[in-house]
Amino acid sequence: MNEQKLLDKLYKQIPQFKCIEGCSDCCGPVFTTRTEAIRLGIEVGELTNIAGSEKCRFAGESGCTRHDDRPLMCRLFGASNAEHLQCPKGRGPLKRLKDNETVQLIGKYKVFVIMDAEKVKNQIPKKQNEVANAA
Ligand code: SF4
Ligand code: SF4
Image (tube, rainbow, N blue to C red; front, side, top):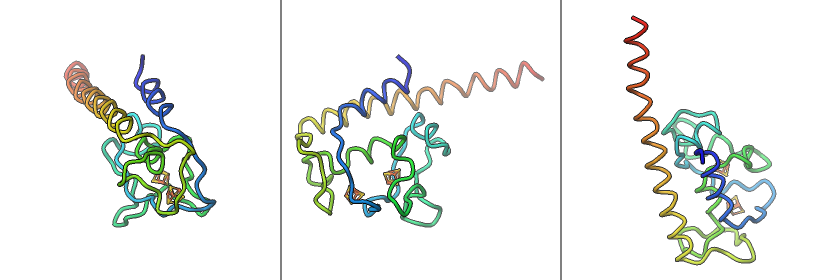
């Protein structure tokens, strides 16, 4: 299974809900994996904030402009019972992820993060070889 599919599998475990129209109050800098950065068209390892700002570059007047491609942390916020993931506006799905389900999901995401980062490392020698062969 490729990384995009693995990531989608994780996303599917997060219950969805509708945010308040136009709200982006929780949209600060968000961590992205390599695969998530590729989807968003940003540099690998880059946060989603606008340089020098705490605001996410994808926060528009009508809310998230990249809703379908938003990283896992954006999807999880408000969708879990965990205290630090509560929407300040009281939004959330009817059935939130329980604390243990949230911990499990983040555990799987951490494994994915490591696997995704390994992919970058593995690409470096390959590129170096390409440069050496071209010389
Ligand atoms: S989760 Fe809450 S605070 Fe964040 S954008 Fe949605 S409604 Fe706004
Ligand atoms: S990607 Fe979208 S949901 Fe995530 S922080 Fe940015 S604007 Fe908010």
